[in-house]
Length: 244
Length: 244
Image (tube, rainbow over all chains, first blue to last red; front, side, top):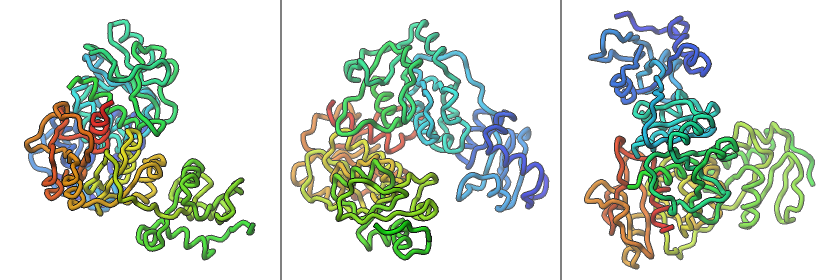
């Protein structure tokens, strides 16, 4: 084991810290996670490359690089006000092109907290896949990972476009879109076997090209306010569609 | 109209900026809101004392103090990265002790985003009152106000304790608590006319003294993950209990 790194200018540390930048993260095909709980999930998933920590982590597979650092150095790598003592470098997840019967589609959902919370909820209600358009918050953003509570490791996460929806529709999936136009109340939706639930951007809602692919347009009946937060609306819809 | 204030050291500006501190806010019985949309709601509610802005706001009632400032001074007062050009000082809201038939009770919900989102959702589903325990995020926190989307002006917000629940139970309210102990699935809950929905702290859930007051213990059936985010769980429960 190498000695404890105490310099913020150590080249390896500088490289790891740069993984907080989205462009560098994607160039390298890596991302960072914080804390013991997420490390455990990432280990189970076999994606851990390097563990940076204040203290030696016991029982790590030998193939995983382990780096001990001082608190000051950990702060340089960590995105949190109070770092949890462990930051791990993981290989980015491999999306599957085989989708299950219950898909969540996020159309430009921009807020990282919302994207993470929606992934967490999708896992809770046994969704098989979450498809995200290009303009969604990145699944490797630390706030997405945090809000997902490790959910990013428990569901297939893949890119999605209006074209993907067209393909799925042709394969017999119902495409359920929340919309104010020609919508039926959630409760009148028939039971669906294979479906994609589409949620839109916080300010603009679902884009026109995505809405075009809808087979069912629904609305959550409510009063007094324009709309719900997208993660809350998503929760209500996912719960209802899960038929529990 | 007074001239534009350009000094961050102006005494009145310093006093207004201090309203970002919870203790000073409560001592003065005031709070801050940002932007034109919230100002409009606060005006309709008759609680605006002072408007600080980059440009003159037309048609303000004469009883309201108006202060013009430079961008730099507005930044000192604002809590936002990109201030919206208007910060208003409002008088704190007067809670009503007369409750309606549909009450949300937040037991130490600590995250301001969660508290704000729950208030927003309560308004959407026509809840009459939101009761908050002492340790909840303050309703005058800027993140609560932002996430509530102005909902703080549309529902009665009052303090709540386990004692309050006991009183309400004695008055015939059903007290619905999410709990893992002896719980029935949400769907088996009978239709309730007068109820209090209780949501607990993000990490610890509902406290023991609050749970003691429960008349109905329910659970949202789910798989694969320990729990939902409290704002999402609250959304699913409020939607279900609203019977729509």
